[in-house]
Image (cartoon, rainbow, N blue to C red; front, side):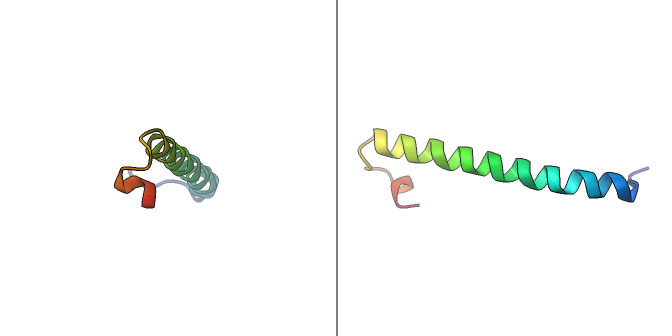
Length: 47
């Protein structure tokens, strides 16, 4: 049964959103660090 109780959806929604934002910010930080480390010679530096 794939149906979830509404309370679980309400609780998991914000947690998933926050987790996604944290992961995205970490990936952006890693990409910027790599771009700076390579002297900004990669297309990632312009993202």
